[in-house]
Length: 304
Image: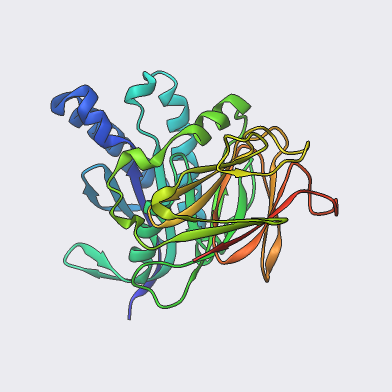
């Protein structure tokens, strides 16, 4: 029987392009500096580094609160460090956290929580922390930390969907920084072999369009150049972008007034302002005005 443990999996986003721009020697040095620093953060919060994985770190924590505190400190400190680095050489961190049964064997670890943490790291975007519900037991929303429900997400190799939250860790992040995050194009960072099979259907009034995963990203907006046009004065010229990232459909708000997302049969409405979320199943997106405004321009979506 494995022990209930919290697994943290970190990955450096954009390391492939850093090797191209910096060369092998300098990029290896930069990656090693960051992963060594991550290991020190883990240990300072009572965690244990299991192994380094090139540009990633796999670590274990005995309790969820220490794990969440550690990954929040990583993101906040690394954000400040990156302001001293030329944009082309920046390598943001993306993090997956999962609590569950873990088997320790010959210095390595195995189990569902290890697989979930690794997959959440892959699915998350730069600067993000994605966690399973169990990883929030005992953790507190404090010091600017907020837990935002992303909903049930299918994890490869797992029969049941996993309820996933995003840990919002930004304390005093300017709008410009959030905009920089939203403008990142994760499709450029790796192969697109996962892009076969997925699709999203969008409906607004009499307009219905289906976009295959390999056709993404597409834009929702008021201008005719948008792939999905919603002609309403509350909708920004380019209001939102829909990306395909590592097997998931992502909604990225790039508007002036935000998007509200409502999933069929799940929880409260989700407000996005220069933020992003995973779209799954069926639901609705209100553009520029909340669902409380019954006349709000609302796009229905269905992901399959």
